[in-house]
Image 1 (cartoon, rainbow, N blue to C red):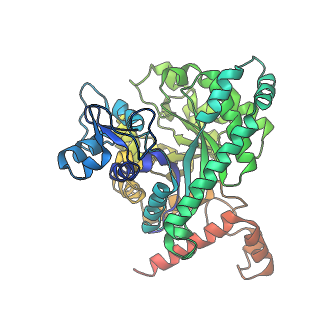
Image 2: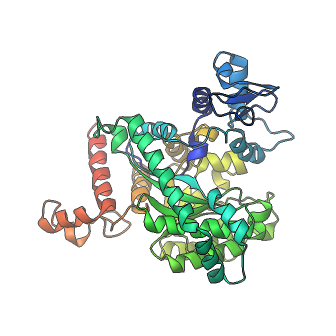
Image 3: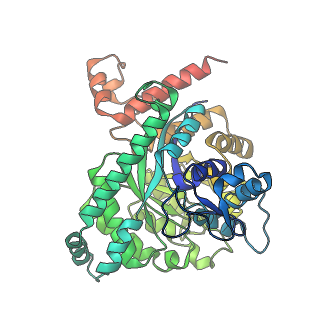
Length: 453
């Protein structure tokens, strides 16, 4: 079945542990046998040249040692996890530091794209560029009460160079991805036809002066590079700094949005559950993300019914067409929220557009097909329901251009194409809109799929 888009996909968490072990082996990294983590070789030695320290073994050992391999996979993912002294929430977020040495590269991203193509996905928005390089600049510059003054200091200190570095990194990733997929030789292969765009990630658990620099750099990057379609904030929303500085961070985004109004914003908000944080901390995140942070999409939104005036907030989201990126497996694994405890049916009841996405498919051991299967079996969705959700993925994507559809019912094309796609005015419209072309392609995929029945 065509699945349109995966709009909430963290690249670092999307790689399966098996792939990271293979990559670590190729890069001559090491495995800490006690911590079950992938680490770099001894200090002072370049990858491929250094020796592993005491208590460590070459990563390649895992590919010949079944016990080591399986224990490492369990450590780097949620496979076989059983809560005890460590909660599922803590184990999940702890995995990222365990494989940080592997890093993000185009070859691994190519694997994600192949998996998307195998599942008849047509578009990916990947959270791949983290703002850490800008954080050091923010630490040196500090944060004034006046955002404008701080921004001027950051520009003077060289934030343009940091943004340029992000673009260079993205060039490398894209070149590696295209090469690994063989897109030069076979541009029409299913994997090469998957459209890939990137979302910049600010790290919300960093000190406020560092997150401001990250946010500003992200907006500058997205305004200059069409491959970067939006800005987001990542890391645990219930973290100490995230909770303390949440409203301040929303105001930082508001400032950057005023400076770069064309940059899209999608925000993790409401990835919280009762008991994880005090009740009063559940009551404002989603609303502030929309009203202050100008979020056009909300990632997770699990705690929406704990917000002040929850039904009013749902009405606002419907009115402003704020879509929710729903991650069913992730919410179950991390927060323990599933079934009737999940607000997925509430959003649909109140007319808030929803999409289905994977979040961290490698760590959670899932994929987009399973997310649709889970939604159908849990909430008894009809094929028409599923088709609407798939269409939402492209409709609420940040692909450039206007929608092919007149409205969210997906029944009538825009006026330019109401007389048919072969008319001159419609061809001109499609030539100007990447989003509309993706929507037309999705309808073609649906027709092909439905003919098989």
